[in-house]
Length: 195
Image (cartoon, rainbow, N blue to C red; front, side, top):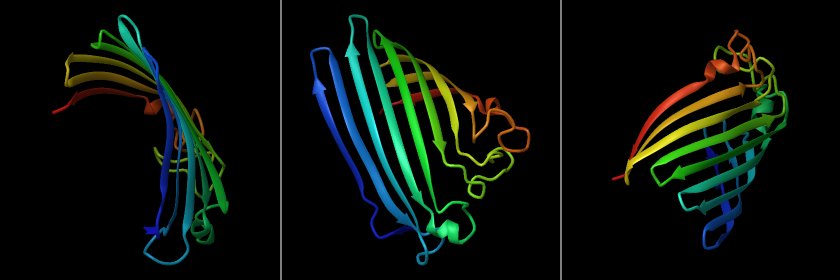
């Protein structure tokens, strides 16, 4: 449950050239939360991020790229007092990069990279089947590969493959029960329709 207000902010600069659009910005969030109920000790999370986006038109297609970085500071007063966190404060970082190219606004290819990292905390990040953390770290990384097809203006069909090189802190046996990061690789078939 949120205590009081949790402000979010966003500032971005944008510029348009004849064939290229560019946006660079920053954003953030800060809030205190009760782990249970509506009173008592709280945990505080403060995020600050930076991002950029560009789009360039070519004769036969469009290239778009995105980049995001987020840093989160966690003050875990409630979790630490309850023995649920080894540290009174932790940090998390997230990076995402991707680019896609659309040929004649019909066929698209995309590739992306993502990585998260943070402080070790063996009480907060504990072993558990499938979703656990054997090494006590939240570090994960991988790539996304995608093919898109737009048969009509309001319809998109997507084939996407997500590949993990690291999950919940390790490449192999990340949960302490023999599960490897690659066991989370996922193939998606998506259909998107705008009405």
